[in-house]
Length: 267
Ligand SMILES: [Zn+2]
Image 1 (cartoon, protein in one colour):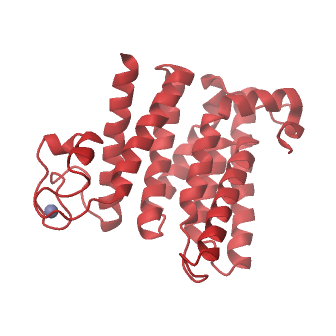
Image 2 (tube, protein in one colour; image 1 turned 30 degrees about the vertical axis):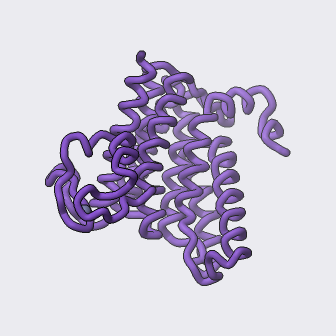
């Protein structure tokens, strides 16, 4: 029963993430006016505001002008609902659940906007840098102890996040310069957030997953001719995806690192 409520809550937050992804890049208010069809402007009825089900009932089309609703809308709602259920099964309704759910919702919004517009907004990454660093010291309170060069646990956690963020930032800055913007500055700022958020060694696992999955998709798109060499691949989608996986595996990564050190993650 609680599971159903968590799923519904996830789908609703997914629906809000879609509103953020539609409106934030255009500088529009997130609360007003009521959601409407992008094409004909008809406001959505109350029934049409129900996530997932309304998309299926409408078969992905506006009831008025039958213009297609982007599949991203459905994908984000389902993804958020599934992620929330996964977190609930792992952590129950706890502090860990809330913190990880907020972080994942943020990452999904980043991914949705990058997917649509090949853009990562400073108005999202800049506040996130501050929040992620501010909470870095408190991961041990959530049960994720991040030992680091023998420092006490809260300090260790903070220093761990600080160095992980700056390290990831410098590496990706190097890639951005070397690739002549093949990797954008938005991605570079995003990995600063991810390092602060995940800390070592979870940041390495996350970036590895993001870079490999993004690379595989990019090469596949080029090889099949679906995208040209010059086309921009929204790399932030994959970086955000890798980070979501890292947050899911955080408990496993933390305990494996404490048992085996970094060797525990070598293939
Ligand atoms: Zn319409």
